View 1 (tube, rainbow, N blue to C red):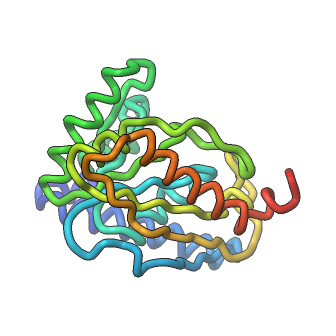
View 2: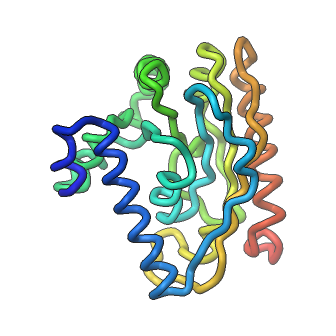
Length: 221
C-alpha cells in the first residue's frame, strides 16, 4: 500500500518505499528468527551504468534482500504475480518485466525489448535465470533472455550466489537462525558475445560458488 501511495511522487520514491519495506522485513528476521546476512564481493558491482544481475533463486529471502544490495532494478517475473491483490499492484508500480513463461520465444523477445528500455532509463535488470525457485543443491537450465539482452546492449552480467535456501527453505515457513552468505561475482563482459557462452560462464560461477557456501551442497542433500 505504501509503495502504491508513493507512485505519484515518481519511481525513485516507489523504490525508496520498497527498500524500506525490505529493510524492515530483514530487521524482523534478525530480531525474531536470529537470521542475519553478510555480503561479499560488493566491489564487483559496477559503479557506472545499469547492468543485469543473475541471482540463484532458492528462497523468498532474496526477493527482498536484492533491493538493499543493488541499485534499483526492474524485475523479470511471471505475469501471474501481477494478478495478486495489493502485492501485484504494488509490484506493478516498480516497472517490472512481467512475462508469460509459457510463451517461449515471445517471452524472450519481451525481456529483450523491455529490458533495453529499462536499461536506458537507468534501471538494472534482475533475473532468476532458472525461472523458478530450486532446492539447495539443485540447478536447472539457465534461460537465454538475460544473456541475449546483455549481448545486444553491452550491459554486464553480475552473477550472485547465496545460501538463503539453507535457512529459509523453498515453500517453507520455518526459518533457521544463522548468517546467510551472499557472494557477488566479477561482472562478465558481454557485448557481442554468444549468449550461450555467457550463460555457461555465469552458471559455472554461480553453481561453483554455491558448492562452496551451501550446506546442502556439502552434505550431498
